[in-house]
Image (tube, rainbow, N blue to C red; front, side, top):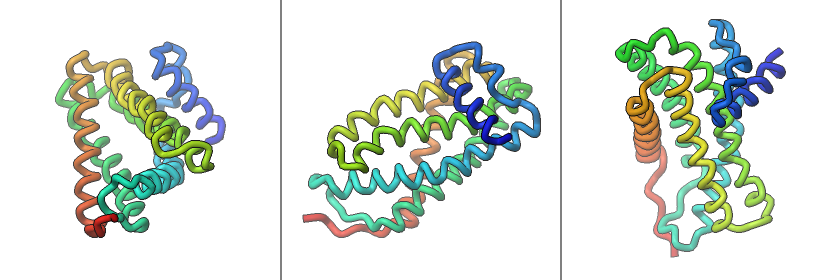
Length: 201
């Protein structure tokens, strides 16, 4: 059953990104469906491991990158940072949605956020596949990752606006809050877990 739900959820995330009303019928918005949506986190972890490994290779392959970063601590920081961000953001949004008078839409928001993060992680990983296969170099990989970042921000805005029901300005504020929280947690885990690397060259 989870396989069918996964396919529907990924289809729904794609429809949501496009602003297509067909997204409404793709997600299970019951409490049981909300619990199953956390499968998105579990399935995101191997995708994140691949993306983080490729990102580490991108950094280490760039002769202009100033330091050598150990692989193990870098991957650990990325994985733990993602899990902490996920939990912190959903908790914060439960409080924010209540403060905005939108708590009735929080459960659909949680479901679409959970599955959507898997969707955006997959999109982010796609340009790194040819790089990992040696089909193009660091410059092309970085270039093709830019649309993935746009998709990430757009998806966050869509679910804040269309699912949670936040007004335009508040939806943008939620997107900026998500980005700031993610960046801050990455910085904290990087500081705690990644030793100062030796300067390259």
